[in-house]
Length: 192
Image (tube, rainbow, N blue to C red; front, side):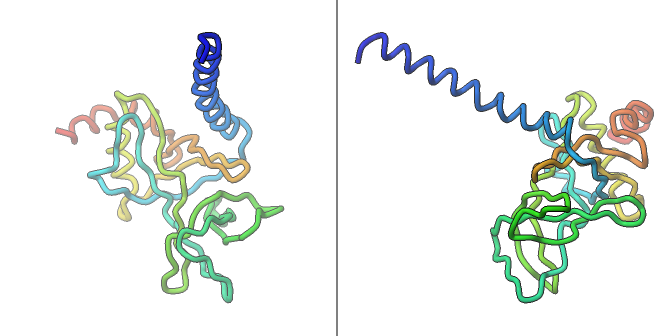
């Protein structure tokens, strides 16, 4: 193999390695800028695996839909999860579709199982990135406000073309970064 050909192949490899992450970032940012906004209630996440690195692990409260009569979605089936809103303005999963919905907003996800008349879903929306220094305090605040006794945490989710990106985590109506800043002293004290 000639030296020129090796250099061309090396440069092609470098360009490919830079292009793939750039396209992924571009898609993520496009959803954040142009996606429809939905507010989902959240549920607590196992505290031993709740925080990894610089993100807060979150879970949408209701990750299931009523099973569809006479339509089977086997475990692992990729599906379109239709999104609806309740009277209080919170989003929820309204149903499943085998084909892309024409009118309703949707997320792409997978069926995990069907049990007691409900189809349970694996939804690829589970982390919110933020400043590394604030993330442990934010995780603590999120955990406290996701419990059934103090259920005030929710997420703002941007959705576009089946992709979902968490825009913010809210405690009540307060963005989590602001909540951490306003309650830093008590969050740090409770960590000791």
